[in-house]
Image (cartoon, rainbow, N blue to C red; front, side, top):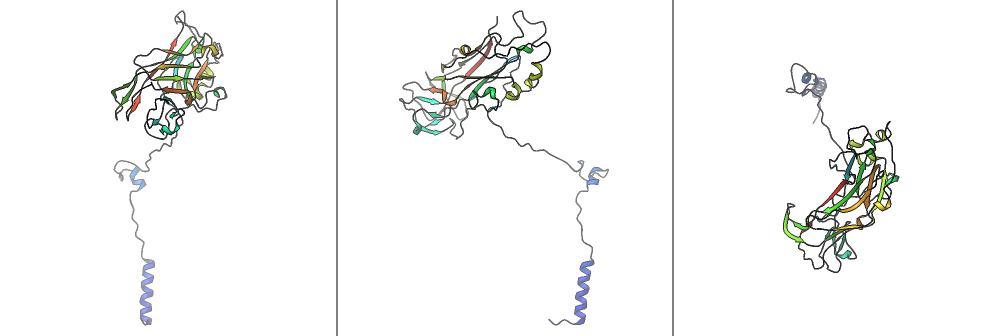
Length: 305
């Protein structure tokens, strides 16, 4: 194409027009309008906000709702003996880390629900006073009885630690459950649950352990005027090193620990390595492709009259 002076002038003019032409703007909702009488955002002013929570947790940090100067704060809520190919009647012991003792080839999954994560929770702690129960399944009794000052209590009730017992019993036999978790009629009679090598630790860092709002003021309450400390561990004789129960309906309470008068101020933690918690299946038991469950009840009771 041959440009003439006229063509060049026209092109130059077109270019000039495009430069000088006003740029279009596309206004949405005016911030001022959304906040003013014109109500530009239909009743909700801008800016508006919402929230996100980022969370992660470790171990069992659930709250059972128990309260009181003396309370059962934690027990092992799940003991997970894993998923296995079959029941070998010569290798009938299973541990709470999901393993068939001395028969690793029989282990399929670490959890009874066929997943890889074993559900037996262990204690995560950096408290030196609890080093013996770290990385163990655990039960905790919180004893704050020294802070029960004043009058009006029963004659045998005192502001002293101890005089309590922790026990556990079987509620029912090992029973197959359906896909909704409901019990079926299939039960295994004579299975036994045992706990060996009970470890013990006691700490005054109660709130740091429990993260329970009930314990937030323990550090100041336990040193308040009129409070007399009796900072003593439960004696070795009061802790049962090994105990067990047959899994059956309405079992009998089995003692785990007993605190004498003046023992146990603070948080008392009893722990068991998962491999020291054992499920022994009865000789000749017949099993199907199913999940079998049994329930335990842990009880904290007073030994004072």
